[in-house]
Length: 273
Image (cartoon, rainbow, N blue to C red):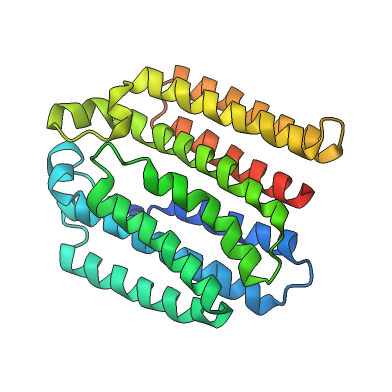
């Protein structure tokens, strides 16, 4: 393997796009929860979430190493760019750093963070290839803003909206994430929940659920308000992007479009309520 390919494989083992996107969303929600949050709060929440996301990414590749050796031999562990032992040690180190930092946010916030991390690990190790593969996404997505608001001592009863909307968005993102792998998973006899739809229909259902969440969020925020219009705009842009990438067959393009759109929707919705 060429040096540049080696480093690229090593970088991808932590799944940098979703890791950075989720961390960016976490940081964007801090001033929404409390505009007077100190720099230390940004630092602890950001670094903790990045460590948790890196752990989940590493666990995913460790759990999938055998399957990837056949379907995706270019990935870090099958290609030999990273050994399984090094991946395990690195995941453990990220977990310890995240847990140690986040305990300074308070016991309740720490427990919510642990719950989110657990969702990712349960998905990677046990549920990814089962009919319950959607569940960790549906639970974890609404936990993210709740974690931020509890960490900044900014809980409000209006945040109960996060659970139904976040759960549906998490389900939509799960379908979008699994849809490109459905055919390969079927061939290996190891498909998850999205397998029952097929790649095309899974993408359609994901977009429909995303659009429904956008509609409900806009209604709650207010049709005529500035944030309501921005929410509608974010949803439309994400759906257009999703349509384009699906037609062009861009791998992971649907997930990318809906993930970025969901992050934008979350910030706009929470800042409004």
